[in-house]
Length: 120
Image (cartoon, rainbow, N blue to C red):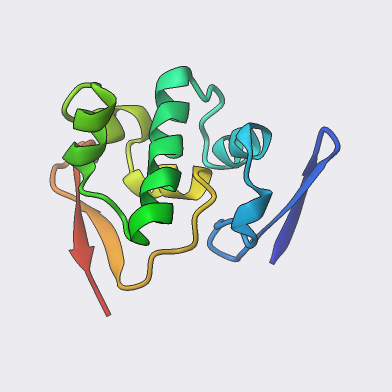
């Protein structure tokens, strides 16, 4: 477990970078997690995506279909890939627990399009 301290905020993440206590999430912690994932600017579009992921998870305790996120936010069809490259980055920034039994794999050589696969 790693403790990240920044601007008076202290959050704990596990060895994979997932927030240990999902209740510690807020916009400030999201920005810290985003920087940790290499995203320096958490735009309104990106913040809308991570907020949608949090709300969806609270309701269904699952990762949504990627196009469903974009459609509901009235963003371009591949908004998850365009905004975050790997959707797991968005999940981490949303402060949600590591999804068990799934991972994302790229379907192109440019690593711009991902699909979710079940594993293990």
